[in-house]
Length: 248
Image (cartoon, rainbow, N blue to C red; front, side, top):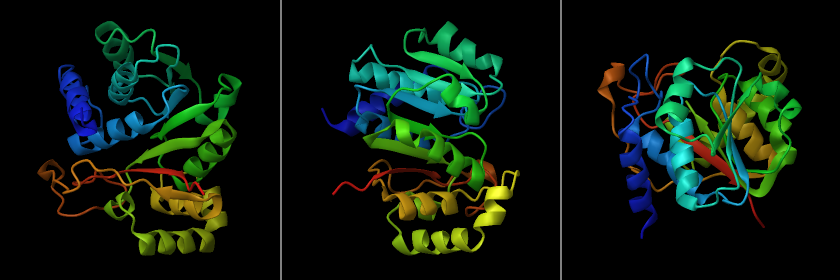
């Protein structure tokens, strides 16, 4: 069975929960093609290790990852969801409706305190919490020693140019990061300098953008009332990317 068929099946199962892309209060905050990208990446991850997400919202991404875990068929390993203030809908969606008690475990803490609660290898990580350069760099560095050699790290709310192998864009973002590194690391705001953070990780740590073959023709979501990507807003197009270590 083709992998895209499996992705479609998981998305169909997820749709039954009625969690909408950007409709509050019960939302996932991801467009359908971004949901497919998340699932595709999870299905590529080594199933014999735990997975972890930072940022839970209403539990939509946890459900997608739990369904992906079920599909891989290794019940011994879990998804750990990290948030410093879980929305009550998380428990309702994930546990009351989803019955994912054996798959999903909550870690209620700030992302910088994860290691006080968890310290086992991870083969998939989804960073979708505080959207800033410093948060991404700090979370990556914190979790780096837990990552398996083939660990996949997913990110949301990047620019469309970061969803493909656009080497020029990555190079430009790296230079922006290096020229402003002290200020970016000191900033406490959600600056949405995620492209720059990912480019810094790829260049400094030897990672590369993952080629995700899911709905590569981007669909424009008119609900945003935008015609193109604008930093710090809900993108009208796919804004999910993932990286993996460059294996020699």
